[in-house]
Length: 206
Image 1 (cartoon, rainbow, N blue to C red):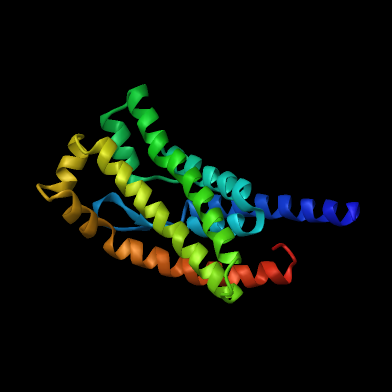
Image 2: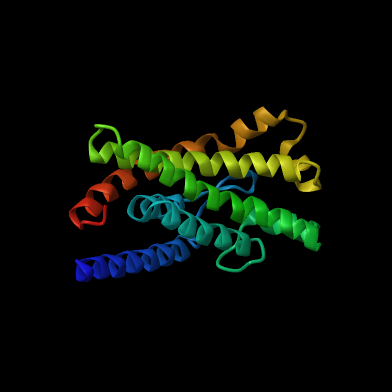
């Protein structure tokens, strides 16, 4: 029994390292979109970690995603056009802290919530693929929700955001900015995470 637990622990740690490595690679393959945003699939590793390792795994990989996203505002691990523009115009420490909340803290919460959704889905009679599909979809949904909500709440008064909104209402700006992005991210995350759930089951990781 102890050997089995030890092997499972090693397998989970290996998976965790692999998911963080995938995040680093994905940091350089974002698809640019208008308004400084981009299509990203970084929530897929977060959702997979949430399924395989529960809340701790979801939060750790979510935190790794958030840290990479924050560093991209300073040209590290790739570049976030919006992030660089915001910190260039507002280079102070206080502003950096707000960026950290938007980029890092929100992604930790996404990992936590994805794990909660997965736990809830496991209690249903839905097929395993559907359980993973819903978990992946929710991870992408929460990521978009938190990222864009905090973007408007924390940075709406900046010159960058005023120019980006160009007189639009908050709702109109959000719809125009994330319409295509959000749909693509949620669909891809759902499909891939659903398949990952089946693979994890075969590997006895869940």
